[in-house]
Image 1 (cartoon, rainbow, N blue to C red):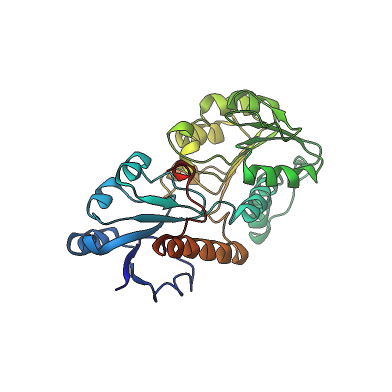
Image 2: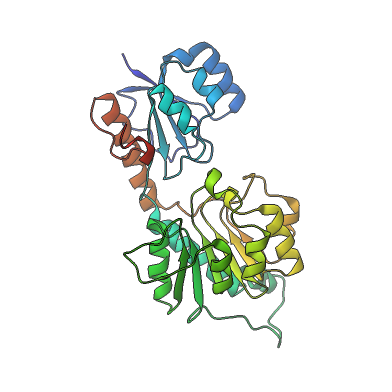
Amino acid sequence: MKTGLLVNVPVFPGGLDGLTDQFEVNHILDKDKRAEFLQSNGGAIEAVLTNGTLGLSIEEMVQMPNLKHIACIGAGYDQIDIKTVQQRGIAVSHGPGTNDICVADHSLALLFAIVRRIPSYDTQVRSGGWKTAADSWPTLSGKTLGILGLGRIGLRIASRASGFEMKIHYHNRNPRDDVDYIYETSPVELARACDFMIVVCPGGSATYHIVNAEVLKALGPEGYLVSVGRGSVVDTDALVVALHDGTIAAAGLDVFEGEPIAPQNLLEAPNVTITPHIAGRSPEARQTMVELFQRNLKNFFSGQPLVTPIPEMVDT
């Protein structure tokens, strides 16, 4: 008998191939249809494939009394209630490292785009316009880059930025002893020290709105912000104000609160460039993600250890 698998997020073409021999795959994206399905079939579901943005609510878990494993595509799992899964003994896996290279590349692309005003100049030329004598924007070489969250992706960003002769400052919960970059004691101090700030830390209660009005003020009117971690890390209301009143120069966002629906006042800011949470997407990253979540699912249900359990599960 096949194992019941619920998939509640879009999956890359071919991403579920290779699972149907072992799993009864139920790919249901619509929330209402999923709720209807769980009312009558929740007991048959033993595994869920999701991601860190959507996750799995406690209410949905209650409807799946036999749920044993939650596999997250990508590194994030902030919408999984850790206390609940630990109490129920539900194993959770994720995909760290599968898209680090892609996210790092995209972060620098956003930074170049906003500092050199590439999207607005493209629009200007297409509309028949051209440069003016006053047009002059900073170079990136030799500037100071602040990285909020110097983990795997942050290190790759730092490596790329070093190629442009940038000085690297960072803030983590604790300083790292394996890098020579300059540690700042808080997000405010990091913002104050840098020209450009890239936010790449994970979501969750510990990082909720740690980039707030005070941090944006410290970044200053010649400072540029890029956010590629989780939308909840940056206070959107404060960011909108900062963009419109010139508190900061510009922002590049791959994530924002309430995505996929962006606030209208954010869209109306002329100094923001937004991409639709695609920093981690590439053919190479996609293939690695698929291979990893399939290995985790198959390992778990064949009695083997998870390849990449979330850190909270490592000792359980």
